[in-house]
Length: 270
Image (cartoon, rainbow, N blue to C red; front, side):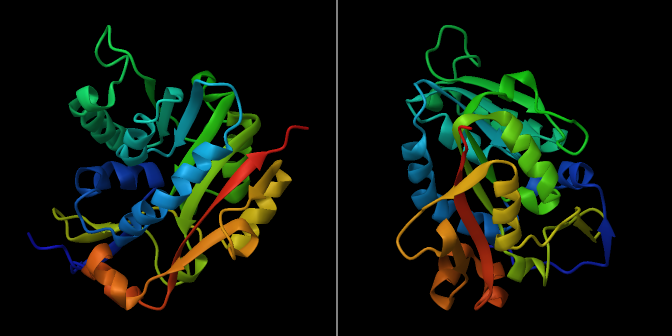
């Protein structure tokens, strides 16, 4: 099966983020998004470190903030130490795809509230727009961990970290990944609507690593080390020629550009 390359488009249309993702939902996982592929690769290292850093009593409550189509929600539901997963997104369309995906995978991941009588993590899927709500829903508060991947590009940093700070219990851990500002200064998230031929773009911000670290600290979140030689505890990844086969042909034009960063943060206890 061929992998999509960048499709041609007739014009660019900017939409509110939740509306753009409602329209993107049907093809989000199949349109050759190389940044998502790179995120998946990096999470193989970052996710186990995230779990090791959580020190609160088990079972844990983990929030998938900006869960999209449930890519990371599925991963969380396979962790034995997690008792509850709260998956939040502002896009109803993305949540519907996530709900369908998780229902189909229910037997494999053992979701307790999809089939009565099953043992396994409890799952809550809720529409939540952090731009419109002053605080996270009660079911997401006092979480032991938050995972939020490729989300903060669409939100002002002060809004994002205010929500994360209200979500995490003291000592809780945040796993954060995002499009790097080097890539964000050239392009942004978006897709071509096959029906209209338009390039649809949501609201995007090219947040720098330095700005992310500073704003996180302002809200009581301190960076954790993620590996030897990593700058300030943040992993930064550029696309190299030998990665194209794994990332797909749409990554070819980004060779030499730093496209991704990720890190782990802990909420201060006092």
